[in-house]
Length: 226
Ligand code: ADP
Ligand code: MG
Image (cartoon, rainbow, N blue to C red; front, side, top):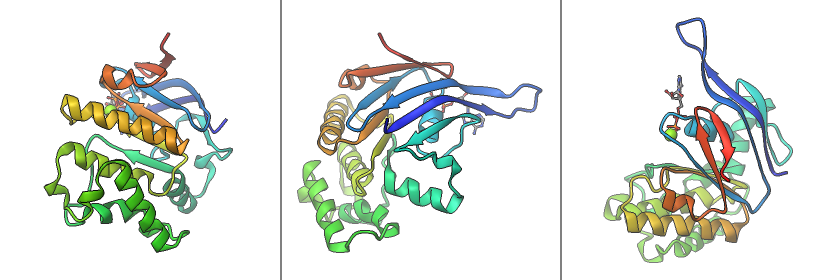
């Protein structure tokens, strides 16, 4: 199993005697090449789960194993390198750097990870940008792009280090309907090409419909949709 989430619980301390329980014994298993969508009301714990899968936050109890490694057992210094090399993030907001070009934005994750040759990395970034339909926009600044185009850049940036796990939190939440559909289809298509694992959190049933495996999150409980 490439991603194994076992009985993950997340609690936040409160001023009162009882902690706030946000995730209640979440289980999820994914093999390489699989994708899932998670739906659920606001406040149900979806982003908290994605943060834990992305090693940005720690579970209170339970374990996460990615390709046989429990990232939370790594020292902090190794955890950052682990995250950078294996996990890609796409958020609702694109988080592109306004002063950088499209190509530079896609290359940003590679500035930390120097395991590959710069020329090779740049060729791959150009290839990804062509695959998301932005070959003619390499020198544009984010402000010169449409919302859908900016999110396509964010997808290329998330993929540039060939992550085994791609996490997307409401990736189409800020887009109009037709751009949302196009970006959703692009995400699924790239995941199929790259054979990585994809976990998408969404409010959109149209986006969720693109995934064969769907889950519902309700008050911290994750359940497969029948
Ligand atoms: P969703 O993404 O499904 O809308 P979240 O995972 O963001 O939900 O939040 C789930 C619950 O956890 C919410 O009630 C939220 O207020 C609470 N929560 C999230 N982060 C923290 C935190 N750092 N400290 C305390 N409570 C938090
Ligand atoms: Mg959220």
